[in-house]
Amino acid sequence: MVSIFVGFATVFGPVFGMKGGLVYCIDVDDIMQELGYSHRLEEWRMFTDSSKLSLNAVLLHNIDMLPSIRVGYAAHMNKTYEKMTQLLQCIKFRTVLVAIVW
Image 1 (cartoon, rainbow, N blue to C red):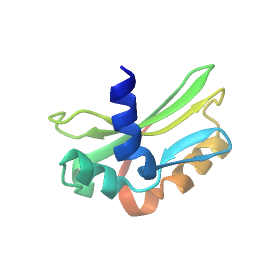
Image 2: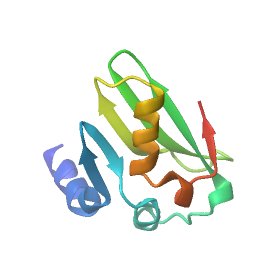
Image 3: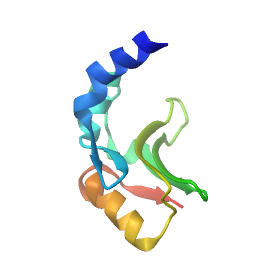
């Protein structure tokens, strides 16, 4: 299991950043390319979910032919307007995504 994590960190580590407890994808295009997917805006949507303990954001393929891609995560952070704004700014929402599913 450790070798899988080390491989993940080596490949995807530079694509993720951290800001105030929020881990987010810095460049969605890079992660898509690394996974071998084309990043066509009209084919992906972002789904956000929160519980008492965490906030998650994933990209979902519109036709569900490809797996979801996590682009944001924060422990001990629930979904508020301020936190969602911070998440969307970190992942550069306007340049990479089209639709949000709440």
